[in-house]
Image 1 (tube, helix red, strand yellow):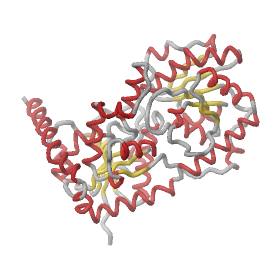
Image 2: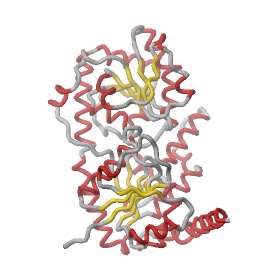
Image 3: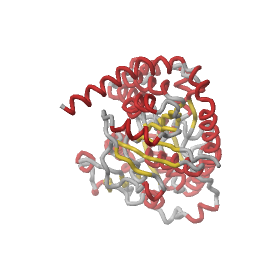
Image 4: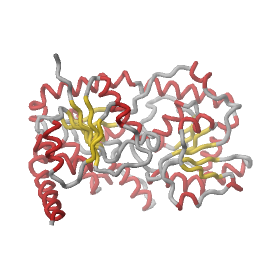
Length: 414
């Protein structure tokens, strides 16, 4: 009889699938491991939140842990997981050395969510009003930390093919340490469109995104200041509804009903509000990873207008479910055309279904992921032997992290 395998996920935050794409992705990962018979414990040093998912409903044990505390050592020794998944590189920095020290045989996986150093470098270039260059990454402080974390792990889950290529070409990361895993969704057919609200039954433009995420806040600013005046000029009756979790006062101050610009706050059900909208607007100017809001739009049969950054790595060579446009004047024109032209709108809907089925099929990736994990469980020593840079960073990098953590723990006790 096969022994049940144990997965420990150490989360940066508790999953909030209704608040962010990152929360939705985490639940997709959990579902894959559950389907393969894993016993899952989700641990996090984060405080509980009002909108966190009830993990017990999925058969996942919830465990609160402390930063810089040897209580984690006792916990992981007792749990003795087969696989440990770090949610973002910051969590690997905090807990990776403890996992290695107490459960050296455990397979260590990193879910990058998106490449933080890419997002940070693009944001910096944007604020300095210059064009981002890939060489910007080489001097980025976050890059040094994130790449070190990737090297220390047995392999990292990469949501974007663009970021996979970047890691291999710019940072010379071995492909054996990377695994492409986009969003994982079910197949969708054109008959599904008949079950969704029709062109006539939908109204308004919409933007949706978690406001704790800086690219989303910047997008709303850009919409308000540059895009929306151009839309209203040629389409005076247009209305834009902006939804998002955790809106701050600076977001709420943009609410301007007289100008058709509505800050709606958190959506109780994101799918429902996107289904009722006619067009998603997402003029994203910096960021990384894949944009969950745009995949969600496709699933809801809602065409979108976005930028090159917004659509990056999302559709391969397939036609977008709407338009990709970086010039604000053209962005506004395309948004109006998509809103008003029913034939164009319906064709864009169909494009979205093709993208979903070609690029995000759960069955195309989940089995391969488990094959990779199972192979590592049997051959981890050989795999690690060929990752010399990772071993080097394990030896030196973890020492500094370990002693800093122990110093903080001792200081806290005093």
